[in-house]
Amino acid sequence: MRLLTTVPVLLAASFLTANFAAGQSVDAFFGVGTARAPSNGVPIDTFGDGTLYTPPSLGGTFLKFGGTVMLTPHFGAGVEASLKPTQSDYAGLKYKPTFYDFNAVWHPFTTVHRVVPELQAGIGGANLKFYYTQQYCDQFTGCSSSNSFLESSNHFQTHFSAGIRFYVTDSIYIRPQVDAHWVHNFFQFGSDWVPEYGASVGYTFGRR
Image 1 (spheres, rainbow, N blue to C red):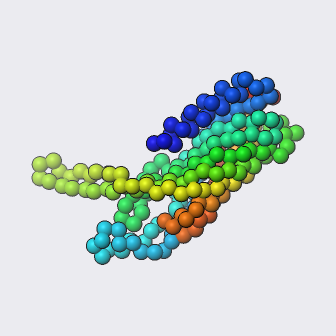
Image 2 (cartoon, rainbow, N blue to C red):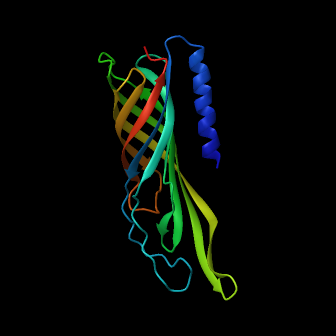
Image 3 (cartoon, rainbow, N blue to C red):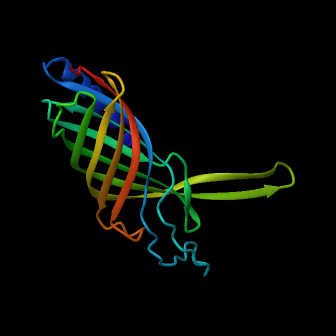
C-alpha cells in the first residue's frame, strides 16, 4: 500500500532535515480514536439478486500516526494518517477506510513549557477498500473462508484539526485532538464532513 511506504519516507526526511537546521524540532506520534459519518440510507442491490442492503454509518476504532517538523517555534509542517485496523461490514461486503493528509502546523503560543496548543490545516485523500468474504464447505476439508480484495474508491479531502500537547516530560507528550475531514463526493456515506476524535502519544526530538 502506497500510504504505508510514503509516510515513513516523509518522516525519515523530516528527521534528516531537523538535524541540519538549528532551532528546529521533530516529533512522531501514535494514537487511537474514532471517525464518524452517518449512513446515506440508500439501499444497494450489491449482488444483483434482488437482496437490498442498507449501507452502514462510519464509526469504530481508528489508529492514527504521523509526524511534524517545526521550522520555527510557531510554524511547521506535518503528515498524518488515520485508518481502521480491521474490516467492517458494508452492504454485504467488507471495507477498510483510510484518511491521510499533509498539513501546515501552527503553535499559537509556547510560553507555557508543558502546554502547547496546536492547529493544523491541509489537504490529502480518503481511501475506501472493499473486500468480498466467501465461505464454502465440503465433506473432505470442512468449512473455510476466503477474503478477496475487490476495488478501492479514492476521494480528495481537506483537513482541519485542533489539539493541545500536554508534555509529561521535556520530550513526551499526550495530545487530545479534534479533526474535521471534508471529503469530496463521499457518496458511500451520508455526509462529506467526517469529524474525528482521539488522543495521541508523541515524542519530540530537539525541543528546547
